[in-house]
Length: 165
Image (cartoon, rainbow, N blue to C red; front, side, top):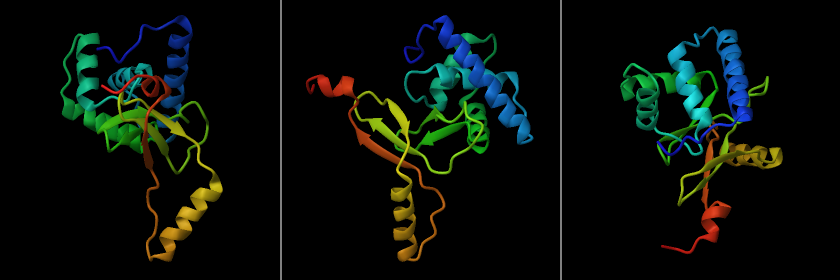
């Protein structure tokens, strides 16, 4: 699978640190961080781009001596979302690791910039005044904001430099 890079020592150490933090968050919330969950999250951390459940199943099956079905991956991903370790990008039907995984805090709103060409996605911070204004606008029309995840579509610098196909 080409979405996972060859890892340097520093990348391996970072992945291990993030996995340890994920395990702490799961334990604090009363969740189990099994070996299979650890392997799936490690693949997602190491990925260059968001991955689908099918991508993760393929990676797991290539890297481990046992086979896992995509439905099992979906359950694992749902657990990760509940633990606030991973975000789903509905427009792509793919998943990314939360950029706050290494932090000791959680955040409420998620904002992503997604490249329309290569599918890269990056989580970004949003001005709190803008977030507040959004909440006020939603309330003004009689709604309560439950989930404020945004996916902004664009082109990453690498794709913007390439000519159109």
